[in-house]
Image (cartoon, rainbow, N blue to C red; front, side, top):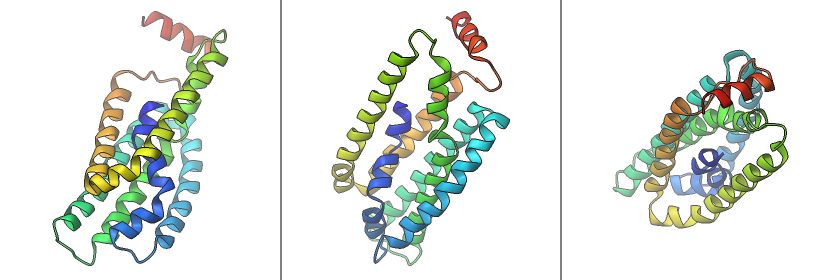
Length: 196
């Protein structure tokens, strides 16, 4: 859940119009509409694939795509900051944001919430779930508050940081996160207890 927030989803979502204007568009309306058009169907596809392909593959694809999307957006802002302005730079930023959002929506948006409900034992599920939700919303608040400061510091740097968070997420998922596809709650608990 921490990686879900440090990837910058709430900063990008809350400040989408501002990002697109900063990227060189006259308004943020087109980008914001496209974000909505992409997010809903890809989230549905992710929900369908979750039990077919498994949680880990979706998280890996999602983290990789999120990292690449932020990197593309960062490159666009970097080139603009260097005074290299080409007509396609705003489109590059828009493409990066759409890749980021689509990738996030297919895995990182929903899978951590599902896995949270699966990995906690019944006796601490309420407390554990509440703590995880608190951490998630605190992360959302922190990213949302810091986003404007980060963008004023360096637009390119902001997206490179989010890209690095996506890469860190990929490593974390590959090394730590257990696959829970098709397992009952009892099997998941037995697997987690035996790996201690």
